[in-house]
Length: 411
Ligand SMILES: Cc1cc2nc3c(=O)[nH]c(=O)nc-3n(C[C@H](O)[C@H](O)[C@H](O)COP(=O)(O)OP(=O)(O)OC[C@H]3O[C@@H](n4cnc5c(N)ncnc54)[C@H](O)[C@@H]3O)c2cc1C
Image 1 (cartoon, rainbow, N blue to C red):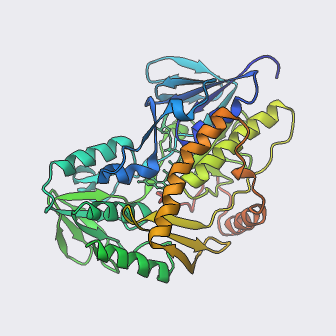
Image 2: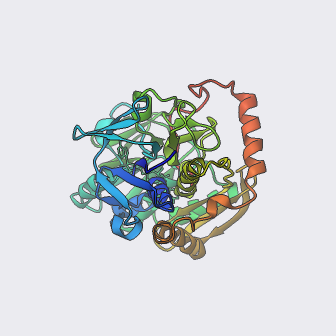
Image 3: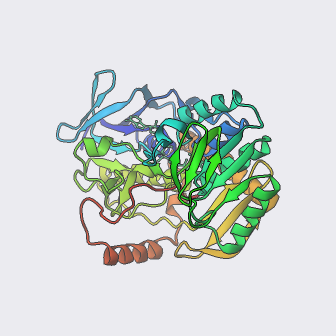
């Protein structure tokens, strides 16, 4: 390719900003980042927005390179054949390469009443709406958090710390990723905060009403505010645009993050499914995937062979209010082991992670090419082993059959 190359990045989250910044290494590449809001949503702090201890936004001027053009708009369609995207304002933007980084949001709830009466928290607008509802609700009113993955546990702890009467409905086990020892520690901290944990068989929610939550075992829990944290979904833009996706809607790519349909389209972050084996949805994966997608584009422009993904990730870090947390270690197959860090030290690690993300993005804005976590050696063998196991148990189908219809966040 000669002359200037225009790369369009859809989505200004962790993956998109990292990719956009990294592409500025070359003077002959112009980058446009399209995002619906004029600020970066620091999603890992959305439960803090709900609890009132953070606003969960970061100014783009602090994390985005001056060389990246930010277009505040929403892409409504990708025209792969014509190499262009259509914008909500009616405009059309041409690209040479496209990086798809639209992230994730709340999965559409299928439980009767949940869509009308429960409050999800996976987007800025949802978290702000819930915050306003809580502000207008007496502190003594019963609040129910549905879902005991990391987001549910963090939200329950955050609200209890604010003096709310919180019940956490697990629909099964508390913190499914956690080892029994780690789970015990989380249960103790939640009990200390006054959270009532409802777990075990029969605790799946079957209906939500204006003032109650009904469980499969017939119990009805009074609930003035119901918070819904049951799984993430992804935007349907790729599927609507005719790109191959997995069952959740993530773009199917190869191990260089290139779409299986089109060499000029790449995907990164929560909305990518490399080889149909998506990495767990997390900022810890999104940022390195953004760097990897940019590297693939840069390699192609340089006439070099792009490197393959070798992400290694096996742990979960969950905050339990402002002063405590758990850092759950896992083995190389990503199964939790008895070892964990708890209490105040885990809270400090979690806070360091939250502060570290904008620092990584800002570092890449000022010194493009400096981020290197996606190049850390060690993940290749594990990724290959996972891919072999995945291919053995799932026949290779373009629609990614076998993948769950929703996914929870990973870390
Ligand atoms: C409460 C909460 C706590 C979390 N805590 C952690 C944690 O502790 N650790 C961790 O690893 N992960 C955590 N996560 C998950 C983490 O936030 C996500 O995995 C991460 O944000 C994914 O990054 P991304 O760049 O792929 O997408 P996102 O951060 O979702 O960004 C995608 C961007 O694309 C934009 N977009 C979407 N559609 C379009 C379109 N059509 N046109 C233009 N732009 C579009 C979106 O508005 C958004 O700005 C948490 C999530 C939540 C909700």
